[in-house]
Length: 262
Image 1 (cartoon, rainbow, N blue to C red):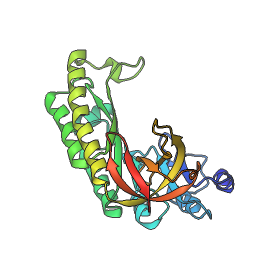
Image 2 (tube, rainbow, N blue to C red):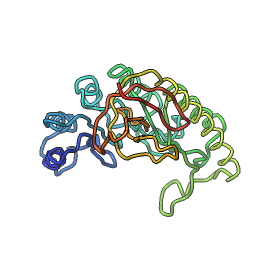
Image 3 (cartoon, rainbow, N blue to C red):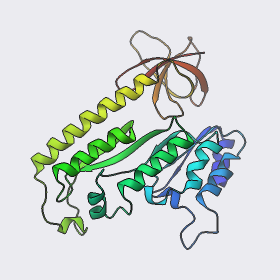
Image 4 (cartoon, one colour):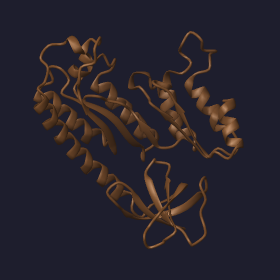
């Protein structure tokens, strides 16, 4: 908390709380009784702080109290990275994830009830040992049903000493790659649809750096509350890193948005 205060005093307007399972904060034996929702409320109370994010969240430990804060705290950005790994409950059990697909979907529903404009990203693994075509199809359906705006997706590979490395029925590499290609094609469609849906919206952008263009236009790259990359066309001589600018989204590119000040 003191570190957050120090950063805000130095001009930071956007802070990310980072941890391997950040929403389990306070549950270890060294905790002082402060829960993760308590911490979020305290950080949100720092004068001058406009945005809070946290990453990564574990579906197993994401409490309803934490979810409700997306409706309660205006500083809490409507974007959450919520690793899924597989859309198949049987695969999740073999992975030792500690939740079912039903539980995951319930969390997603609660998040969208708290913030209907919530943007979700995730992690996905294809070709885990013994994964069937049906179980892989469950993952494709999860991309659709959860509406992920983006995902980090990978082929399974053995890691020495892990339980999975000793499992039988390894998936051939060519099958893994074919499944990954299908998954990423679907995810790319979802990502592009998400960006198109943003056109016409007004939001604020935190400027990060100038974007050098051959035509000499004063274009700045920044991030909005949903974490999207936004290129803002500013009048000549304006713009600085760390500045918040209110904008209207004018166009969607493949991986970013174009905007002008309002």
